[in-house]
Amino acid sequence: MAILVLGGAGYIGSHTVYELIQAGRDVVVADNLLTGFRAAVHPKARFYQADIRDRAAMDKLFQTEHIDGVIHFAASSQVGESMADPLKYYDNNLCGTTTLLRSMVAHGVDKIVFSSTAATYGEPERVPILETDRTQPTNCYGETKLAMERMMCWTSRAHGLRYVALRYFNACGAHPSGAIGEAHDPETHLIPLILQVPNGKREKISIFGDDYPTPDGTCIRDYIHVTDLAQAHILALDYLLAGGENNVFNLGNGVGFSVKEVIDVARSVTGHPIPAEVCPRRAGDPAQLVASSDKAKSVLGWKPQFADLNTIVATAWAWHKSHPNGYDR
Ligand code: UDP
Image 1 (cartoon, rainbow, N blue to C red):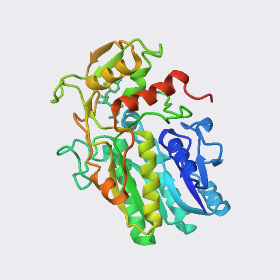
Image 2 (image 1 turned 90 degrees about the vertical axis):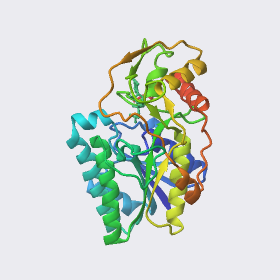
Image 3 (image 1 turned 135 degrees about the horizontal axis):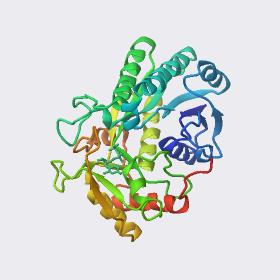
């Protein structure tokens, strides 16, 4: 029996495939390669170029492979783009997941772990954020992810499918081997953008606002290493395979760092002065997002291994230094 990883050529998906293979699992990857990279897929995984919106392709996959459980990363994930082109997000994230679930139900595949996000909370009522806190997304990306969670819930009631939604905070870092890492085009995330400066690809980093109600005025986020996220997916899948009920878990380190603090860590890791310039706020950014991940720790037995921000940034730097242009297409 195999595990199907949808979106397994993307950033978090490819790292999860590496951890699954390392754990001796049989892995099938499907990805439409619109934003993912064939080179990111572990050579021991069986690869299909397929889109989750393509019902015939999904049916063929479930007919060809004996799939025990699905890990679903195949979604559009840029906040800014989701505000400019919301229908792309409804199409890819919601229509895509509808087609996928229809095919899973038709083929009796009844376990799914999928990427949700801290963006489901919107402006938090308090930090650290608990899974039971109010969900009121402030952007279309978060809205579609929350709707995916609800879709799973109703599908579960009607068809007996079981799911785990993992609400990630700020995914970052790269595989400790340096084999795979983060590569987005365009890049919008803070740590890879900072590292473009010592890599000679950018003159300075922009700080989006220093007038937030935080100690140094810049936004605070909870940065979590991608390998720790990958491990959580395996634990969540094993939880479902062992009969676990539908569930939602936050995944973060429970410690917040400001934009200025992250830049300082990157200066110390790279030895580069990394000039920074304060710019206007970016629309839709909450001042502070920090997770309580106690539930993932107690229910799944999750133990992040790369909690230290210096280590996280050092793994990211090792990848970006050796792959300044990301993967070859
Ligand atoms: N940020 C910034 N400059 C940049 C990119 C991001 O100041 O060039 C800030 C952004 O406003 C947010 C934090 O860094 O407060 C993390 O942003 P990112 O896009 O990495 O993740 P998000 O929190 O939006 O998921």
